[in-house]
Length: 175
Image (tube, rainbow, N blue to C red):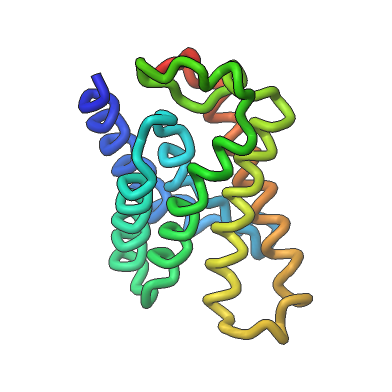
């Protein structure tokens, strides 16, 4: 059952990587906001996915982005960070009674988390990724106040796209 889910995950991430590289990276909303969509499937891997596997999936996705965009490890580092912090954040925000029975694959959703925690989960992971990418790009904290609007704007746009993806999704609360 889990192998089927991982195959679907790999197909989704390949499609979103392609879409990110070909379309999203060429979109500059309001002149500087870039929606980041390629990590969307990573956020919704089942709870049972080991942390090391999530981190590897994220690192590979980031590496592919870096190879295609000719960026020296920026996406690799940022995506790996998101993959690494995903599980502790996920378990911190999930209602305990939902985690009582993890015998079958269960993915994060509005059904396993309250709406506010679900949006917070997506928001925090998007913020971590966008902020780390942009801070690594400028490689200076002196410019933080200048890039803060870019970070916040790109995070909000990314979150809106994640919410749209979820609304269009026909998934239920199990994997």
